[in-house]
Image 1 (cartoon, rainbow, N blue to C red):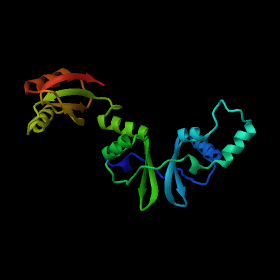
Image 2: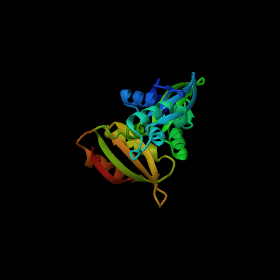
Image 3: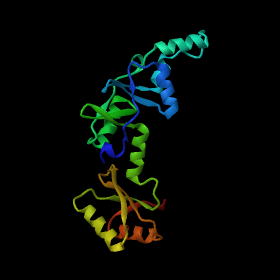
Image 4: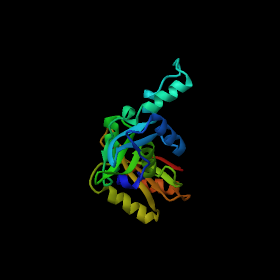
Length: 213
């Protein structure tokens, strides 16, 4: 899966010279928490709602409403923004996840030919993870342990073919302490969970969990 398939294209942006008052209004109007920051057409950073809170007077301030307004009008987005982590639209989604994890950030900006073409957030990444696992789809769900050896996927594929079931999602989750593979298999919903589980078990697999979801 490429990041272009999960990003929000053509995101709303703001110039670095805009005031905190302006970016706050922009975020509120468009229900945003993160906005790419530009200098002309060049990406120079990203500003989030937390960045705005950081440069805004605290609730314990002795400033009047008018003084707070004047202060925020003088404070620019450049004062609040932080460097942006960027990738291209052809970046694999797992590489984006690694970048976000290593940088401890919750937003990545997608650029092409030095222009902002998209944005992806931690919420988008969670949606991607859910989609990969078929979390929002109805179907039968099997957790299977198998020998981690060549040909095991062929055996599993032959079994599903003979049973006439359609595999919608297949994920190699991890290896057990014994070195065996653990697989997540999601199939079209039907009433044959026991039959399918018994077939897998008879073929040398170990069905650790089976349910309708």
